[in-house]
Amino acid sequence: RSGRLRLWLVDPKGNEFVQLEREPHVRQPIGMDAEDAIEMLNEAVEEMDRRYREMKAASRERGSRIPDIAAYNQLVPEPERFPWILVVLDEFADLTADRDARRTIEGSLQRLAQKARACGIHCVVATQKPSAEVISTTTRSNLGAQLALRVRSGTDSRVIMEATGAESLAGNGDGFLRLSGEEPIRLQCAKYTADA
Image (tube, rainbow, N blue to C red; front, side, top):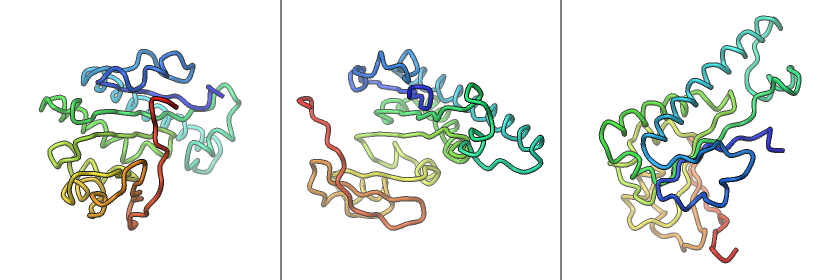
């Protein structure tokens, strides 16, 4: 159901998420640039803080700690349940090209990546330019998982998942997934084609 999930999308190219524009679970309008990304991330941080305040109040009423969104949603009536929110920042290199925008975006993203999962807010950062100038070590280390598709070099692979190997992938959805603190595992991802 559309009430259980909300997608907050930023699409600098303006064509990757066009097919989702009218979906009821997509936050409107879809973001197009760094200014939109900053606004969306600020709103997500405010929503995270609001959710934690409500979870804390409910914990006090209950007399025991509510650890996460799933536990909270089981305790409250349907209209008061929090939907899961997925914030997707596509073309991260474009969004962070300006130094001031980068600082602001990374600051909000790090706050969300550090503590928003328990309250049902998750972030996906995508880039075709996996360099250290685009994905800082701090940003990468705060994200719960990294997914690498085929990249040009071992250096690019290390930027994404702190290990080489993605440069040797076969393409066509072949990938490595690295969960926080674990070794990368090889997997086959769904491959989007315009004909699908």
